[in-house]
Figure (cartoon, rainbow, N blue to C red):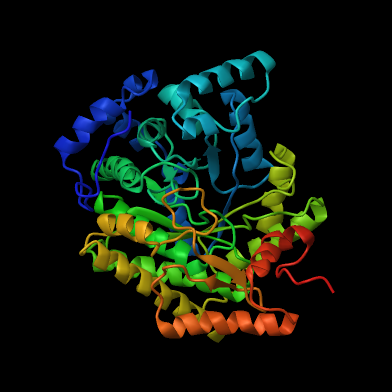
Length: 491
């Protein structure tokens, strides 16, 4: 059911109504629930949702009040159990915003296998899927879920071709939708062509744009952490800015750009600060001054300690970093992170721990301290090096330029499974635990930035009395699970 697009055809321009609706006629046939989507009826339904249950409204209120909101991840196969889970996280976990995380079959458009999983879940009365199967359930069941809770609900997934999922989600009353053409492809899948997936996300964003034009604002959130493993802020921030601009081109006007915690407090605060500044700068540059920008900070996405008390330490550190960076919301982890799918009680406990730390730090702001400003300047200069090259490769077109940049390794996401990713960039921590570049691959950083990274890693090597090497990367990947941030050699 994929639409074949060549890079020559792909352009960063708004899809015309003819192009969109011609494609839509095909998309809605990919599974029988697509027939239950009526655009005008869905617009009317969305307009009936109270403002306090809308993502865009609640995020804007948080900005005005200087609040940092909290949101878990959660999703199970049986919709009545999913409703119970969301209500529990809302009441016992004090969550401000709610998720519906989609199952792996749906992410891969394997709806027949998903149907089997739903049936087995009903037979055994327990979830046999690792998420909530939105496409198979269709519009009416999604509305039961989204109307059963007091808070706004977002769809979180990881789908390269999310066109039908987007249609059913928004018609089903979800008011926020995560993902993007790079962030939900390169870190998630092996063999999806870059140009094709960017086009699929142009469709999803054009749909959101059509709702916006009809008076319904749907929040869109590019996925910030990417692979969640030692991602230098300049790489994840660059991807977020590109996806924000591509979405705005299609008419999206409410954007939440994200970043995954790296662990060094100064770098983490600087990353959110620079992401905020640069997203605004580039949206303004391309004429999208009416687009609203908020930020999301993802708590630590790497390995977790198995010990629950130690896991709470990692969660609280992420809460502190998100609060001090003044992120609009924080995505919360659970103390069962190392063990698999958490209980609802563990999920709620992670939320309450996070809320406690955020409330305590509400009146403290690290964004303008000198060390953060210095680190922000470095990240923004790195981002400009990459984004200028994307623009050059695309001759001014960011969709074309992004495809070319990924092919050339100008955009290179560490530890990603995609065969289209160069996989040459290697990150490692410096002596203070900030993430630096051990191997630049083909990233187009200026000479002084290359020297800066090298010097930072040499400082660590000297302190540890060993050479700068790949062993540092390995040690750093496992460090937090072992109780440290920097992977030092054993004494």
